[in-house]
Length: 574
Image 1 (tube, rainbow, N blue to C red):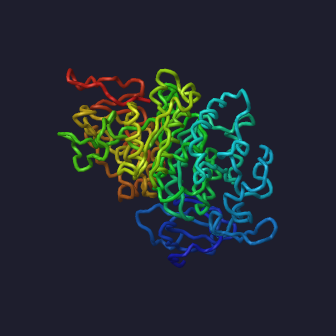
Image 2 (image 1 turned 90 degrees about the vertical axis):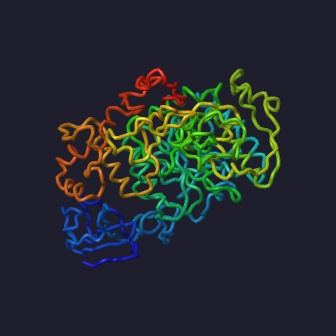
Image 3 (image 1 turned 120 degrees about the horizontal axis):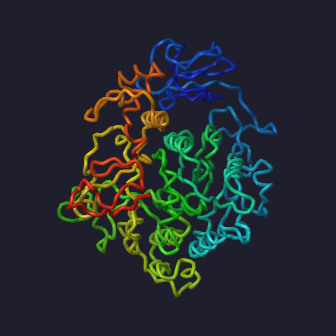
């Protein structure tokens, strides 16, 4: 046994997580922490052994962390025998990938001099990427005439026209399929339309094996566990390499777009991803999120709320109010850069949308591009859609637009700021009740503040919490543990041994604590104690003003526990 530091080696691939069987025919296995690159190796590994510290000398080289076993394999080559560019392939030399062998290289090269491929010809010839759509409609894969998605395509065409007319921006909507995910793409789309009916979408870039890969892996794992819908991971550029295990998850599709133009914040790629995914209805998730049971219900709710007469995306209410008024519990964060009317409390930039919101999203993106140097454009006057419907408004052309002079403002620095301001400016007034919760809220049992996240102006009785997803899951180990716990406890567990409701700070609920690690050694009994941590969230997913509700539909407009002084909740229940 030897400890290896700071080296990824060659030909290593994960064979199991700690406590699981590791099969490695070659007998060369390493055990340790992939994030810190700290390992113990064995060259005499036998089949049928578990990935445990005791099998590697008995010294825990990464205390408190869930460790991994990796198997060393022989190097692969491209089909033509040429060497693989391993920097573009997952792992460290185990499986040759298309990007590592496609000598055309780059995304833009996929456009040059090649006719649009038929569905049967997608990704043939060893191509790494295939153009799905762009500003050039003749190169875009659009729905068949008469298909139900034809209207969505029409709305998209109107929405992007102004961006596409700008020569420096016309490539910003080019959207490509990563051909390693062709089988999933064909499964989730059809011969008649390659739009997605419903889809989660997240966005990522960066180097191979970065922390963002680990974050996104937990996200897509959660969707595989708790959803029947696809998730599109929108990758910007070609440096980021989707890990090998993503290909084994049937929900995952990877698209790619070119890097964002100029010096805009990377987070404006969120808006590009929402447009580029071509989903009839979608839910945007950041890579530091995971979902739980019930999140799929938000797709139906989005179609109900974001319509031809309400053509704006909807965001969940933020945990803090950012209005500048007396009594605001967060005065240090008061948002004073926009002095006009605020039609809602500050919302969190985790939008859901239907295709009716595409004009708003495209105009927001164009406004931000133009603000870089200053200028003007004609924005859609979306308020008129409430009376005539969105499609009639779009077909009216310039008569349904308003000239907008644009110069850079302080509220344009990030996507969340612009989403809030542009929604306020349009008079939009719908926000979701909070479904993107801090991970710690899943583990506090009954110990939640009765008026959590309250403020005197918008939510004096507190904000309803919906245990459908979690945000701020940046730490891989603790999120991995929480995800495993939620999966174990997603249905009402049997034989629970839970303490009384007033005991909410349990040692078993602290990942890596001495008690939790000891309990983990008895898997059959572990769940009966650990599932108490998330009690009662598997059966009562909503908490508001001291009351747990067993369904979203049960939550009233006014909290009964607030008495005669209770105020109607302003947020919409999915």
